[in-house]
Length: 226
Image (cartoon, rainbow, N blue to C red; front, side):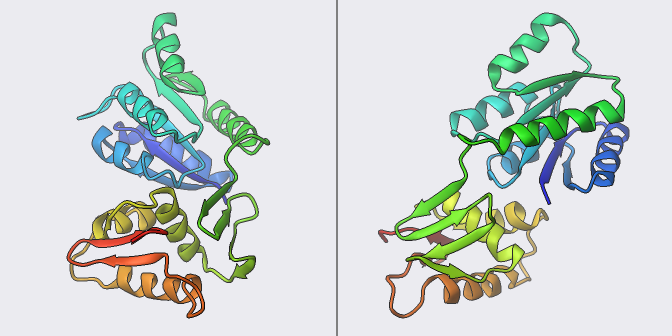
């Protein structure tokens, strides 16, 4: 199931997008401001982003520019009431893959999303992440280490994908919780530690050098050199 991030501050428009895409069998996450949208977009865990141009705190052009600067190639459908040719050109040049003007027909929006998802699955799009002998096949949704396939649950796969996309960086529990689960972090929960423990037992078996490390007082990192 493709995972879609909707960054839209207008609740009515957002619900229209979420309802239509959910009807088409897509997993949809909605955030209503540019700052949270930027944070979620930079996680790199989504298959496509619908992005409003005019947002509170951080505007859409800044968000799409930031994710392209980080070499994140997630397809972006920009949606805006700004319909001038220059506005559309600016959005596409900043890194948007398509531009849809408000008001729009829900069916057309869904069709554009489907086209971008198909385009994103073509050869040439990043399909595999590698750290040392750990590999993640994003098309087959399969992980392996040293040629041995790892039996991962869906949440474990998303957690490992996020850690591999950000390998070498210290990832706080807040970052992991909000990027993988999509909720605001509750300091009273130990869900991150439980899932990291399970993932570590699958990735770092006793005969292999550990890749998942605890950064004392901060969080976790996935790195070949620690």
